[in-house]
Image (cartoon, rainbow, N blue to C red; front, side):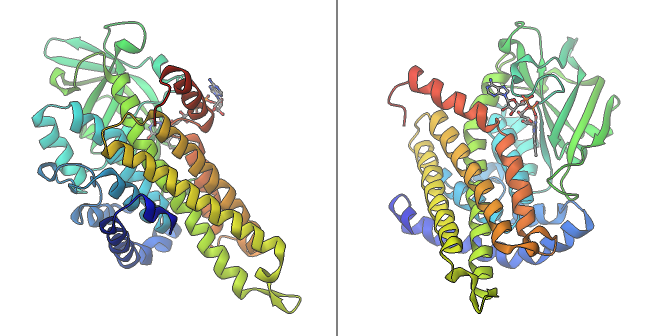
Length: 388
Ligand SMILES: Cc1cc2nc3c(=O)[nH]c(=O)nc-3n(C[C@H](O)[C@H](O)[C@H](O)COP(=O)(O)OP(=O)(O)OC[C@H]3O[C@@H](n4cnc5c(N)ncnc54)[C@H](O)[C@@H]3O)c2cc1C
């Protein structure tokens, strides 16, 4: 495998180990949960018990104590097995875990993060609003100070796992500034036991019935003022930093889904016969498989390169955006071709490739749309020449 160039023998062994674990503990349950349209809460605990939710975080918060290349490997293999669970882990580890682990107080790390990384708590990020999507800095949700408390009012959409979250991290205006320097990250533990938190609906989406994408309202929700993560007014910056990690995780998911699409297609093209021969004997099919294989390898290299940069302490904004964009576009291409290679069977719900196509589309949209990521990549070319 080309990526042996960027990872150690220990990383290669870790890949084998996590793949075997997911094959044994996760894969046998995927279809049942998908068919029932049920979120796999038990499987999140299984992952937490195995140290596979907070892979790159310290063991004192129940993290895996490993590096970001291991995180990328674990995310890729999990997405190859079931992307829905990988998305849940990426929110926990990247978007919610990173700001709390990096900027949170010791008690926030201990009380909030340890449970999330143990798989006991589900974490969600509530950033996107109906009128603040790509332009997240224009968020209008407020968290106003009232004595020792903050009072949260606003409307969020597309909060992955919001309706079942035990910890919500909300991007809200705390008033330091009218722009992005007036936004803070506010932790709302046990949100569904609090007055003023309303789940408006689960947004039906291409992620499938088992996924939870939540529209949620906050009307006078009170939390202690000490629930602000890090410095008030720095929430937007923390989210941008968290996205460097989240995009490595999403890039890895793209690689995992593309690999799954390739695996399924390779097997199908070998078994399916038309005109008296396996369809892989046709150059038109074999070239599709070759393109998929190239994209998987290139996406994996970009992803591991971004993760390697983080392990070295480099700023990886551009590298993570490149990896996320390339790998999720590759996943969309590979999944679309996988459906085509499977013919009518690919279009049915009886084969997994239609699911790969649906979830790949989501990955091109979240963690910054791939258009926004291209904006990030091109801006960094001028702002920080030589960034690797
Ligand atoms: C499956 C899924 C899970 C999600 N999970 C979460 C979550 O957990 N928490 C959360 O807070 N949000 C989440 N989101 C929301 C996601 O972050 C937003 O959908 C995304 O940021 C885009 O915002 P928007 O949908 O409002 O699109 P818009 O910002 O309205 O964009 C519409 C289109 O215009 C393009 N566009 C906008 N601005 C520019 C520009 N400057 N240059 C070029 N093109 C541009 C976009 O790329 C897009 O194609 C999730 C979304 C999905 C689909």
